[in-house]
Length: 137
Length: 132
Image (cartoon, rainbow over all chains, first blue to last red; front, side, top):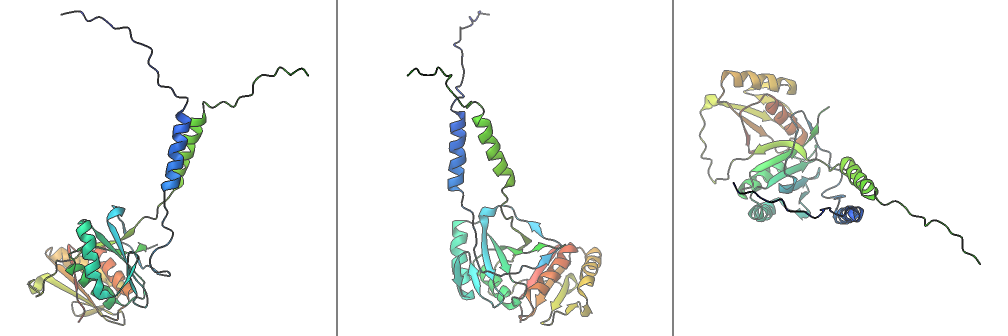
């Protein structure tokens, strides 16, 4: 076995003096880039409560569909007629095949509207849906 | 004028990083994104004609009318009876498909309550029938 000579190493040290600046930069970066969605969809929607409510994974894949008490419909930020849902959602599904449509409907919304919307979703091949509910106490 | 010989004042910056990290951690912990919640379901693929043929004994029809009354396999039941009844039938026949059909005028809340009960009974297959 050949003997390996130990090299004399220089004293290695990472300068930590500017660590604070780096961390502050990070902090400021996140503060500036973070966008909180303050309000979206139709206001005044009262979600139903259900015992089997589950948490949804993958926030990124979620597209919201809002249905108000009076039967107004919105997909993400677009006010639509029910017949237009399939076309819009289909485009979204092409962009993201993992799409989950979360139906946020008011407790007093007519079921016929929800049913029509689901029919449109099926036509758009967006088959994963979620009925937005709150935990039942 | 003679200048005072003072020691140079200095703020120690060594713990700056720790302070900033604490801030970051504080915001990390206190920030709460509104978590999405709900009842998940997978819809059947769209087909023009209703091709799905299911044996009648594997079907359990639940109908909800506009007034919110529930008809479970030809019997009027209350909301609280749905889960035990579905559970019992699923125990008897694990292949059971629960078909939930609501009227157009049924309010969404009633529909969700019934769906919730069916989910609670751990029905293996739930189908949503189109209203007439």
